[in-house]
Image (cartoon, rainbow, N blue to C red; front, side, top):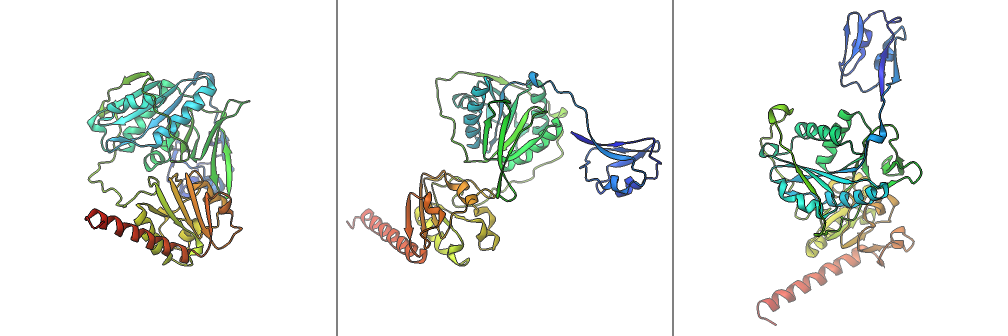
Length: 405
């Protein structure tokens, strides 16, 4: 870990560094600058110092890496259920733990979460830490962070995994900062290096144009958030046995700066990441009006509408529909790609689909290399026909249901 260091022999106490700090975390104490919490190492103070009394140095930190063992998974619990990404993490966590020859743990926090402990064992956890208390609902990042930091300091896991959900992305960085360790965000791949035994964490970088592999050789635990739907769920085995450890909390000892007054869930007919059928559009649509056609097809199929990044960049559709490395990762039963060429960034977000149907006028489009069924045609000829056939089928079903058949 790096820090700002002050050379007292050079410092004149002029205070220019205090004025230069954009975050207001520097103060003069007995004539010397003191760097407080919140420093981002932006170098503004270093550049402002006329005497060269400030510098960035690597802070000495002795960590006994051999004291850390096991893979810990944060089982995200909200609105009365465990988020499915937790089961994906347990599947990958079991794989990593077995390769390292270490145990697999999980921790779950919330009101009424105790009833899910057995399920987490069925999914592979050897030990489940349960913090079940009405005070813990709804989710607030301060007390959850304090609970997890205390558990990690006690348990000393080698690896700590979170889902890259809104809660995971809020919680994991704070835990990592408190523990003074690194964090690799939005991973799409995890594996163990056979030589170093370190966790290799793979994630998209530079807008998905590069895949970076990151390691944490000097600190523990090795922490990562992992995208939903990029890994298979752990198989459920009711014969598995494990240990459930229930922990009590003292609300008066936990920080809690936020009071939730009201929660309004996002209203969407079908969640993109949960949908069994996704109809996605690319630049081949020609304009935003093309998504109206795809919305009709998706509605008839009981599915959701997806989109490629260029269409979102053009403002044709909201970012929440974007599929790919810089958007959502999906694994539907059927993925219908309309006018999508198949850039590697988009393919990485949907290639786990069971069936891929591609419609494109370019027979050499990369999407066809991954498609289960490829249609070389104008989508504005194919999609309206599909819609009409589905409408006819629905009319026939309604007719039969009314006794007309």
